[in-house]
Structure formats: structure tokens, C-alpha cells
Amino acid sequence: MKYYDKLAKYYDKLYKEKYMREVEKKVIMKEVEGLTLDIGCGTGEQLKLLNEGIGLDISLEMAKIAKEKCKKFVVVANSEHLPFKDESFDTVISFFGALNHCNIDKAFKEVYRVLKPEGKFIFTVANAYDIKWIVKNLRRKGLKKTLKAVKERRGRLVKYIDGERIRVKIRFYSMNEIKEKLLKNNFKIEYSFGANITNSFIDKFIYKSFLKYFGSYIGVVARKC
Image (cartoon, rainbow, N blue to C red):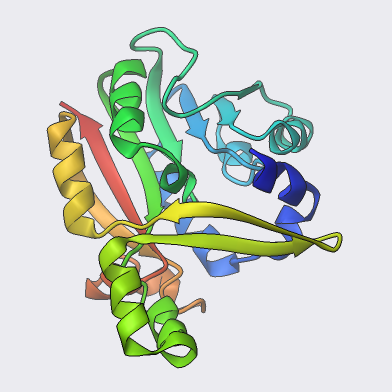
């Protein structure tokens, strides 16, 4: 994917969400079991935390950085077509919105296929009700366009890299939508959490509170039924 190939060498500097990373680390250290696949591993921030981990990313340049940083096997592939045998993994993780760029139903079906019986699926997706984004959009575009954007659940990520404007489409989700899609694909939700709620140390203490529904990302710990 051109957007992430161009972004790769700047990614770690541009995305420094310290407290979001701490929440993710907390969940990973508590929940991850056995051989784990990291979908959308990016430059390897979560992959490096795994004792037994394999990375997967759609971007070749991201995959190169993750492989060098983590000294782990990393494959370039799409989350809708995972190049692994059935029931290969104890856990699958996907953080920081990797699932917002694909057909999420197809991705969920593939995750189900490669997970062992009762395997764990831990992930975050960009939140349609991100309060910080809504307030920012209200200031810039007004109520009508903001409500339309929330309703349509679609947007774009835009960056300027080396003088070039690059962008990629993104799909946002509500917690209810994620619940429906997980149930449809035979996953049972164990609990949900929020990420990047206040972008401060407070996130470490409120990531499971009702405020989780208004963070930048919705997080879920689910299990294959």
C-alpha cells in the first residue's frame, strides 16, 4: 500500500501515542498466549513484545523495518487472505487501526480460520465516536458535515511526506457494529477497552471505564467459539 510504504521511515516519529502504547502493552502482556500473529504489525511496536510472534503487514517497507527491529519473521500480505494453514495460532492481535483499511468481515473470517480452538483475538479499530475527532471536525467543518461523516463512517488519513501529499481511505466503526460482526463470525467478546481516550497518563486508569466508547480506538479481547 503506497500510503504506508511512503510513511514507513517516518512512522515511529509521527505516531508517538505514548499512553495508547502503554494501554496496548498492558493488554498484550495480560492476554497474549502462545504463538501469536500480529496483523498490520507496522514497524513492530507490538510485535517486539511477543515471545512467539509472526508479523504481517500489507506494506513492504513497514515489514522491512519490523523485521530488522524485532528480529522476527514478517510476511507481506493482506488481512483478507492470510497465508497460513487453518488453526495455526493461539492468539491473533491487530492494533492501531490496521483493520480499518480492509473488508473487516473477510478479515474476521480469516482470523477465525487461522486461530486454534478457543484462540484469542485482540484488536483495536478506529472509533466512529472519537470525541476528540468530533470536536475538531465541528470547529473546522461545522455540525452538518460532522454528522454526515459520523453517519457514513468513512474518512481519509492525509500526510505530507517529502513534499508529496499522500492519503488513504479509512472506515470507522462503533462498538455495536463490532459486536455484531464478531458474533456473526463466531467470536465471543470477553471485554472491551478504549485507547487514546485523553492522550495522557489518565488513559492507563480509565481504559476500561465508560469513557472507552469515546476514545480514538475501540479495543476488544475476543475468543473463538
